[in-house]
Amino acid sequence: MREILRSNDPVLINFVVVLLRDAGLSPHLVDEHVSAIEGSIGALPRRVLIVADEVAQAKRVMQEADLSQWISSNADQ
Image (cartoon, rainbow, N blue to C red):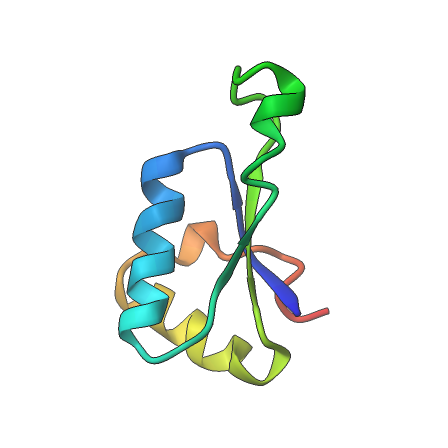
């Protein structure tokens, strides 16, 4: 699994998850329940992970949606 997005913005996170699912990919939202630990202040970012085989396609989908600036630098590692 590779991180494709890390953000505190729930709207952006949900948009990217739906965008990737609509493209036939399998994104996984992690850290979504960490808000219970942090007191729901939104200080800790949530991450969207993608299977390593789908990283290139996920990046292409995000670029086509003009979301290049949100692609995690950890996506290729």
